[in-house]
Length: 473
Ligand SMILES: Cc1ncc(COP(=O)(O)O)c(C=O)c1O
Image (tube, rainbow, N blue to C red; front, side, top):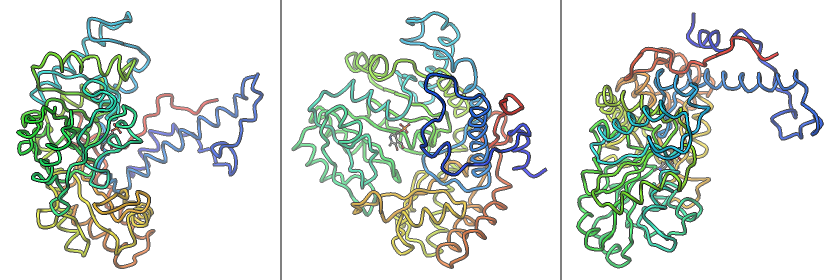
């Protein structure tokens, strides 16, 4: 049986798909049922089935696509299992052994394991697995280590910083003011001499390192003496590169002068959608402030199912993460070289394109980031438009960002990166129709639909789990 058919058979429970009604549900039309009575059961059953059907079609779409979003990845089967466990229905507040709710004995056991694994993986003395996302982890750091009105060092959005650093993001929410580092656009990293001068002049209290367009390690060791001189704490947002750091192939911030690291746990670390805080410091005041930051600062319950899944992902990374992380970076470099050989303008070409999972490609010649990302998506190659240095319009940037975590997770290697570049070249430089390329993408991807670098490797990566086996009444 073809793999997508198998996915469907396991997934849909044989139920017919409900046709999408134009102008009906899902189009913001007001609910027709009386606000005082129950909605008709049959109608609501159809809604449930439409949602299930869309999720199944989504799984099938991704199974036969090339997902190259740098911030996405695939969960392992054991981690996925925990997401639908009873833990999802429970509450735990506080720390293991000091909860505000009863019934948390097993949650405490899981959280303690999770904390031990996190400290082991990142070789640090403090961890918190309660932030429910990377942004929430960032808010927790800002709550712990900054006050309204403080200055905090960061890169600019157009240089790759995450929206957490923006006035309309976490920085704004906490009312801290950015001090922008000087940027070396050639080398896609912080300009050290100019930034030293900026830091000495502005004297921020906290300095954030970390990016969403993260090609090269940042100059932490070089800037550490300046941070010490001005008394600033170093904070690293490892959302993108967490799995590479843990896999030993990227810089190791907590051993390069950084006191606290925040991250999402679902990008290069192929874990559940969640967040984490890690610290390497003996400063009791910093530890005390950090301990109260996620809870009660910026979360109440910490999504126990996701926390347990994170424990699985951390254990799997300790067992399989090095080989995976090496291949992620090797694939990104191979894709960069193959794209350049086919006439694409890959940034930092003189520096080997990247030392991470990410590539930045200037596609002004091909129609600009928005247009190119849209055309690629129509051909089954899923990317995102991205600001590049010098860009001013987030809606119409010159770049696209490509990432290799997911294609690596399904077992692709350097040879497959050359094929991806060939498919992109055909579409964008030789006017091959999107439909033709999409079929070629699907037939290429059919051999790469199983998850690797985890326990139960070889299981279907995009499987839709039908728990009930029949559609709602
Ligand atoms: C550098 C960085 N920090 C934080 C985040 C936010 O993570 P989350 O989506 O888990 O809130 C992202 C997300 O893309 C990111 O790139």
